[in-house]
Length: 457
Image 1 (tube, helix red, strand yellow):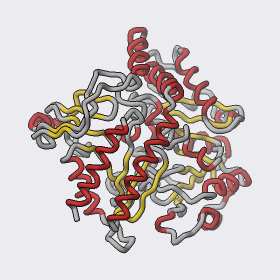
Image 2 (cartoon, one colour):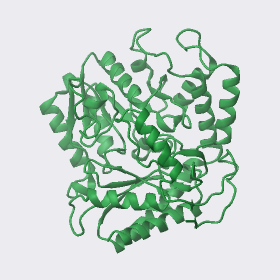
Image 3 (cartoon, helix red, strand yellow):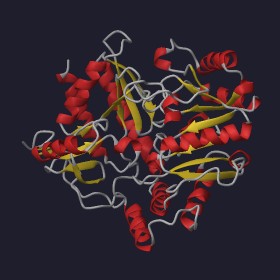
Image 4 (spheres, one colour):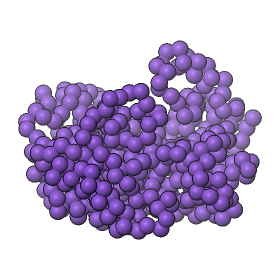
């Protein structure tokens, strides 16, 4: 079986890596026989709790495609869950990592430091929102950075309570499982969880019956006041656009009202930008869309082109409140990851990827809105930049349709388009293409989605 739907062209210079034809090409069924063989080995060797969305095993990637062991070329609308924002093999990142690995791979910054860590901290202090004095600490994963943001907020305020929101996802460690809303698959059977974590209602425009941002914030603050009390609260932690929760974009004014309440009540406002950061939403950071300056901002995923790195950046007086030795970790700010991060930031700025994300969002949003007009099962189209989603419902209602979502995703996978699902109700398709993807591939992917929705009626 062979499918050629876009003209084979070399990857543009900005995407780097091997010269891969930028096309969707199927030469076997998905997954192919070699992938199936590897999947059998995975089942025998890897813990069963480690799942895979699409069991095709990748040998090369770049631009907007993933090439598997069977020679299939798939359109990537997942970016490794918003990690390979600048592409899988961006040339500046490749070169920076090669240079660093030839110099040294590790010393532990807490033992004998190196310039790369400092340079990443300086860059994050420069580009994150706000012109106040800042400090940064580096870690390995988004979950680890969220935990450290909570640690820092508790130390600074002398209070212990943490408020998170309905539908939130903050990670898989014990504290961040407590902060995460969805039980399956993230929390079920893994308790007991960390205490002093409270949940408030989010602004969810599609399901809020036209409640505006100010009213939604007042509802949340009222609940926080009554059930927690500002005098007990160290931090509010929120994703400016929720990720796993369903790409929910709060109504205008919601985030700003929360920040103003935090400032008035000595509560640290923490923006979890693990999935939204680094040009993904058509701004360097998603809070910029709401003109919000967080006290602390948590970043990971797109920060280092696929190498493990995360960060907490924030107001100097808050960040410096932790005692010497209170923050750190063996691998935090690994020199390879730091080299990659500096190259990622250079690539975003030099190649205009903030604007590129906005253009990707405009293209995909229009195609999805056109599809929504023809198909009443698409209840909502939402997102910003290259972080777009559709919420699927039973036609004419707001009742979630998780089964349809699974069928649409599976049909897209069969046709060589990698899409992800999410949402508390399991009824959201999310699209996170790398910013190195071409318009031709995006158009082809949207054509496939049109076909998929037609065949799943």
